[in-house]
View (spheres, helix red, strand yellow):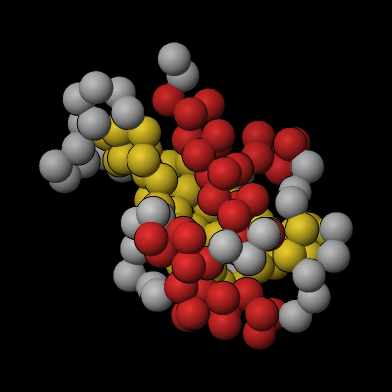
Length: 116
């Protein structure tokens, strides 16, 4: 299976949970890195507008950078995707970290949300 495809699917699940306002669920699932659920929610709400699910093409356009020297994983990735507000692409960016273990299992966690 194509690792980048799996990463895109995982990011799509995370974005859907953000759109649904499931910040606490993301935290309980260990899908938020250094941030707390309320910090992530605050960052998105401060931007203004309503977070909406991007079209599928937006997930094809997200940046996926493979790290040259993975730590304890077989592969590590840094991921950026522009979030959509009120049905339009915004400059609010979701940054994630992706890892692949020896069984080719992909895990993606949210690292930050910020304006680019």
